[in-house]
Image (cartoon, rainbow, N blue to C red; front, side, top):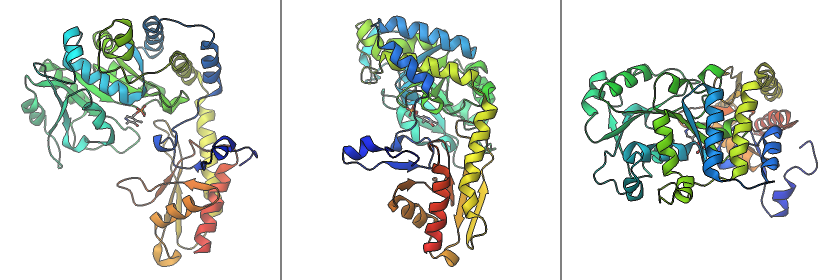
Length: 384
Ligand SMILES: *Cc1c(COP(=O)(O)O)cnc(C)c1O
């Protein structure tokens, strides 16, 4: 809103740009690459390079920065999950790599705790694996896991959201690693957003997991990128299933449609480098300031309860909670989301699944937009 050409390129095409107060969500375009990342990507235009070699040096560089054995850049964390399941099932056997998604003769079960089923677990099925739940909605015991592991087990998957309260009814990652490794099977971790505090970045592989994914959309890399971290064996297998293996080794794996370009690979390395050297105190204080700016126009309005989200873990610190009382303001939180979306400019917010109030994030806001969002909510409420 600060510049008159805000969203102009979209308007010219006949589409309507929106103010993103939801945070880093793929349905709105996820994220905007940082300036340093764009510079690195531009510099990559000047020459071509065999991608097998580029992936190797880029992965080595990331592995070194994060103190993990190996890394591999992929088309998003979603692709890292799919390639990892392919690697768990077929390993480095070229015939099996070409046989997927037909898993005949391979272990093809990815075990997951019932209470950990989540939105992205679909990515674990794409290469032909089957998700098999253990435990139930009330929780999981260590014996549930021991009994679930069999010859058919390809891996045990675990999901980490350190920014959310710990679920006391699921096994801990330590327990899962112990039991699974004792049975001779590998552990897969989705830690896509666990990039802050910095000691959490890559921590799950350093704890002993065979693989974890990271979504680079969360750290100023192109939204379409991500990477796998893991043991050398695991990352070697992932590389063979990838689109680079398909073209470079002439072995036709399932990774072929999950392509990224050399500029993106260079961009991810620049983004990791930037993230590890960034002034995070400053990043957090800017986010806190923007969140306060959203809240300021909302103080003391009857029927509106607001509070500051003080979380700093993961990729999107701070933010604001907004809750309207329908008996006083005349409409629900869901109605408020719709009113903001219908406004001009259109402002996107949400009541996350399983929550009751609006959870706003400043991740996708540009200069001046925090104030605009706060004022738009105040106007919507006062307008009735
Ligand atoms: C965003 C996300 C993914 C998918 O990552 P992409 O890079 O968008 O493919 C997977 N898992 C979690 C927990 C995520 O937040």
